[in-house]
Image 1: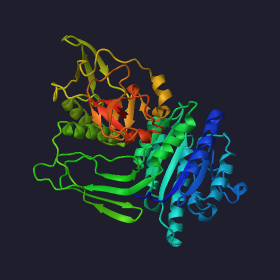
Image 2 (image 1 turned 45 degrees about the vertical axis):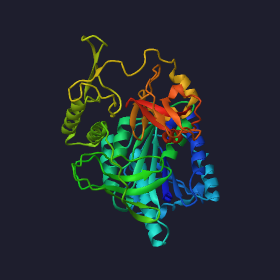
Image 3 (image 1 turned 180 degrees about the vertical axis):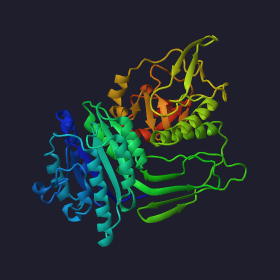
Image 4 (image 1 turned 60 degrees about the vertical axis):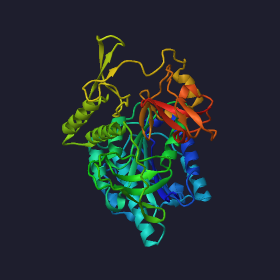
Length: 473
């Protein structure tokens, strides 16, 4: 399937806190990212600090800052259509000019997020209207927003609500947020991106930050479908409508259909227009299917709770009820640890970390209110490994490692460091294109995996809880 042509609006924080290594890493990453734009794409380059600047690549010295007056509000941009430059085609000439503009980025001033996001959505609207009036191809707009600080022109609640209200009609687009370093408000950016049909990713302030930024862009660089809808006759399914689907990612819908199953219809819009698919259905018996439904439902309920203002408590209660029934450890439930061969409870740990349940092996406690870990799923003589050794072998791993969990499109899984899973799981496709065996990552350091996208192609799961890789035999 051909990727959709896209209009990418880069919105880059150049406030004073970006001074030093951060701004240099941003310049390095952006120089490589613009090289990855497809020839059918267009792009807009926006920087913001105290005010917002839209770069005019034809006349860089004439690029203007908004608002033009000293007012904090940006109402004047909505009536001044002619002051914004058009999006630029991603050809060799404008990519060279973009690199020249990027090299001039300097860090100073405060962090006016609200105004910069308004400007970005206005650019989306103007480009959509231009394409329609010129009978040009319709490009999928994407806003990539990067910041390392806290907003100074509005509260986080105001930005989330006001921009979500403004992101409608011809301005409607997915906004993807990047939090750069420890000073950024990751929670706010996650909620904000979720409300605006996108997602957020944290960039750690480290020597490889430029590579992390490039890795993020690769995740969103190939939109294949928009307005994806899985149409089931049954209503007992998890989320079935998705605003955008990228190459290299996957969509999972789970639910209960009863005895009279009718295959779903999958609809969406691709590079060649509307499509409607009738997938072939394979009927298999899986003891984990019900738990997959529970896992997805909990995850989506907690995501809704994050961005909800009214029914937050009820959403969390619903998630808790399911978590207790299926013995999942989540941010709203706890874990009771029991010594092997001992009935004495030794610790009670409140679950912390990202809003993703830990998928564990199904036990005899299925349906009870605690998860009892007996320690029998792995061998007692683990192979030694450290996180630093693993990151040296797979540098891209830091892009998808959060709080000790590997985050892949299928969910979040443990690394299993210093553990050796004894289960023998064959897999069809190792990195050398031969058949292999699913192993923990630290047991297959010889695998040639250059990016997280390549890892997704060879990802496998062990014991329903450990992230593995299809390792050459």
